[in-house]
Image 1: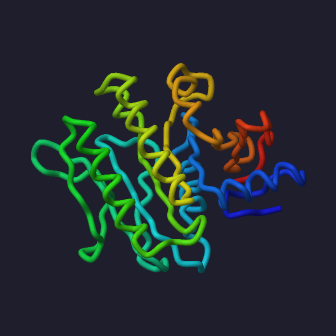
Image 2 (image 1 turned 135 degrees about the vertical axis):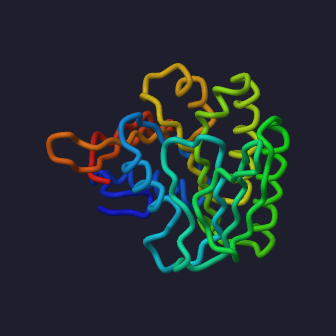
Length: 226
């Protein structure tokens, strides 16, 4: 079975139904794994719906020194796209190079509250046209710089606000955290998310792989191709 959530998933009815519910009901996914930016990028493309023809309302959030994905908007995709990007002191954006027609909001990095406000405002704008379940997509690239520069409880509150708003619109958000699955930060933030997805590049086969952990069902997909 192959789904928009990413690669193959186990041929389990319960597992497949849970993945379908994540799309229909709204969901947030924590994307972890230290070793492969290529795997993060591949997972991001699929979770943002870049490989499909259906229209999507896409929001990309880029923090300073993001170090996991760097995937940017694709001009060939259907639907609206917004960016919220932190900037350096000299005004350099943290986002990948984008075209002049992309709606980008610039945010100074000092206050998490400002970042949160701009992300929520962008979600509100994309939700004005009453998107269908799963149409609104968010990529947050990445959480790691925020944990370096701010208190972890403040980052937790920011992510709680954003994940809650995404679920209200029955959207799908994923948040890059390029750390090992058993790191303290992953364990701290995990309760905010419907699933934790590990990604890696198998050194022997050079295959990009993923492993889904579904929190409500305490289910683990095992390593499967991305």
